[in-house]
Image (cartoon, rainbow, N blue to C red; front, side, top):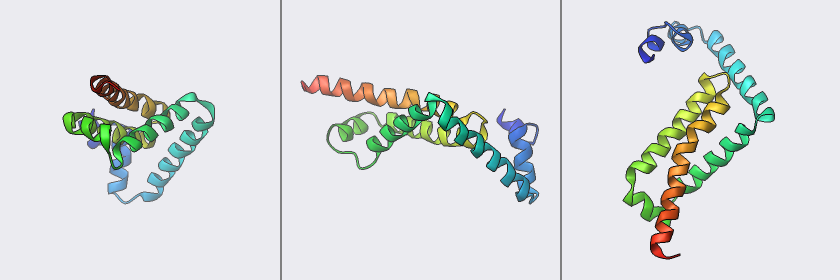
Length: 128
C-alpha cells in the first residue's frame, strides 16, 4: 500500500505526485474538501467527541508527567511511544481519509486504553 501511494498508484499517491509537480491549487482543493467533510462529521457523529476526549487524555498524560504518570511512563517507555504513534496516525487519518474523524478516534482507543490500564494497575499495586 505504501509503495502504491508513493508511486502515484492510489489516491494519496496521485495527490503526492501533483504536489511534487507544483500543482498546489489541486492539493489545496483536496485538503479543503477533506477538512470540510471532517468538520461536518464533527457535528453528526459521536466519534468526534470520542476523539476529542481520547486526544485530550493523551495530551494530559503526555504534557509534563508527574507522580504516578511519570512512574508508569518510565516503567513502560513503549507505552508512551505507542500512544504517540496513535496520536500521529490519528492526525494523518483526519487529513487523508474522508471519514478521518472516525478512523482517528478508533486509532486512539488502544493507546489511551493501555495508559488507563497501566495507571489503574499501578494504583492497585501502590494500595491506593
